[in-house]
Length: 153
Image (cartoon, rainbow, N blue to C red; front, top):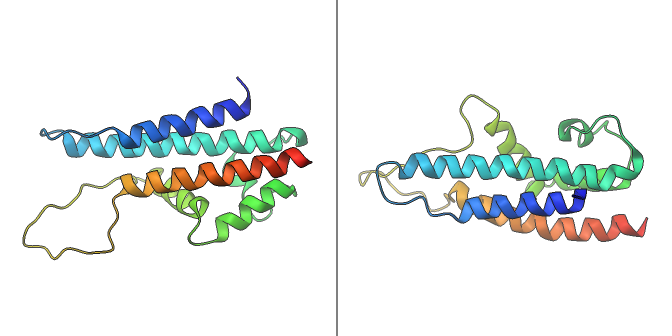
């Protein structure tokens, strides 16, 4: 399988997980958290696959996304474009790297939704599931544009 196919496959699988209904039994909250964190882990694998895809011509020794997207990482146009994107607070890549740090922490990225009728609702809260879906779609659009630019080289 090519790097491009693998990236597409991982993005598709992450999207599938995000859209699976968690059910309404006593395990629904735990199932939802498992689906969200699984999708996030697949999103991380897709990012790694994308980085391999756009840097395969450079034959880099290091392939970890932390290293490739660091400000002092390899000087490649595709990586610099992604670094710039990562620095934009509203970008999918900025969101993803923050969520991946949470995923790898002891707290994890998913959290139980609070269902307490006595609590005041916060209007700006967006479930991780919805954020994942929105950022997966944004990533797919950006990856398509990045591939076009990469192919021009």
